[in-house]
Amino acid sequence: MAQDDSKKDAPPSQPPAQLSKPEFSKVEQLSPASVGFNLIVKVGKIKPIMNRLNLDGTRLRISEAVIGDKTACIILSLRNDQIGMVDEGNVLILRNAKIDMVNNGYMRVAIDRWGLIEKVDEAQSSDEINTKNNLSEVEYELVKEPNNDDYGRGRYGGGRRRGRGGYRGRGRGRGRGRGGRRYYY
Image (cartoon, rainbow, N blue to C red; front, side, top):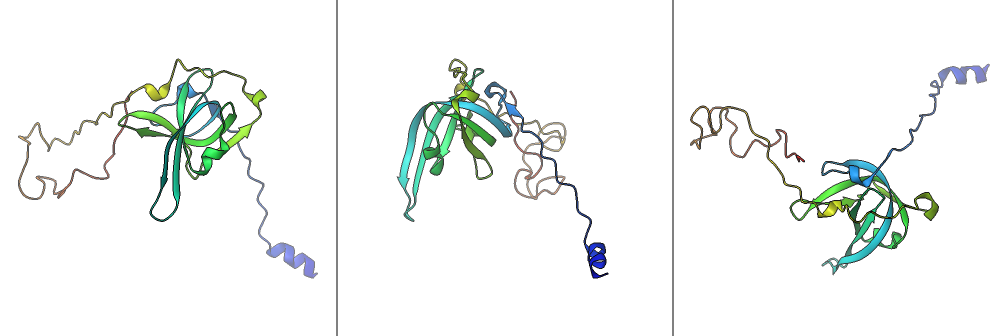
């Protein structure tokens, strides 16, 4: 009798969650707005960029590796422990990677704390790197979206006003939190 009561009090068990298979992108599909993508790439040349001792005694090491597949190549930024995980000629799976824009408009692939770098056997990707299509050499320009609030410069005389920001009472600043920057390509 006691065993039957314990089964009634227990919450109903939920079916196990179904994990979906990861979708892998090709390098040429990457854009400045790409985040959370997965890649299977081959590592080309690795070049150390920085090896600095911080004031607190920790060392900051940054390297850049040319990675790619048969469609294109791009530069992967590696930090500290990631450098030891990658060697020239390795085939890697990059999970949950993102694009960082550096030097005013050049793309780099980065793996942050939520991403993962996995080594796989060479047979999984025997493709050579297409170095003729290097996405890190393409410069992207940040284009500001036009502001259509009709209270700025334009239709109603616009320009600079004295006081607390004109008709809308926005105060100081330039409308923080309303959209943001977007890349157009």
